[in-house]
Image (tube, rainbow, N blue to C red; front, top):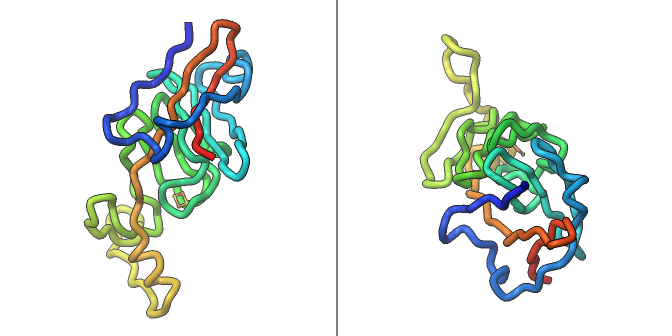
Amino acid sequence: MASVLAFPPLRLAPGSDAAPFAPALPLAELPAGAMRRVTFGDVDVLLAHTSSGIAAVDDRCPHMAAPLSIGELDGCVVACPLHNGRFDLSTGEPIQMPTTGGLLPDGDYVPTWSPPGREPKEDPPGKKADARRLTRVRRFRYYPVRISDDGVVEVAVPR
Ligand code: FES
């Protein structure tokens, strides 16, 4: 039987505790290991059936907002299709920094990725490099999820 992922305390998306549950999709359309985008108004939600249960977060990479629903899911880890960032849905934390480098959630700087054994690449001067360097990877925020008695995945999204 499918279960719901127990997300880390204090990582509830703002306003979600007062939001009503709404149907997202039949559980049969979200088998183990699958990811789907479901849109509520102007909010795109990623539903991921991880090895620890079903999670619902924004379908926006915590780095630069690419849609994670077209990435890869391995256990609880989702890989972004844009800069190869990898994020653990069971903790909300990045486990592989995007290749562009930038700031970790705690503010520590990580340089642009370079092949192993090579010197770190110099960032060229300019606003694009500044934007990469100053972009902070966020932690996931979670929407409450439940599975109805008739097998529908429901999500509480503030609107
Ligand atoms: S947008 Fe996802 S890793 Fe950069």
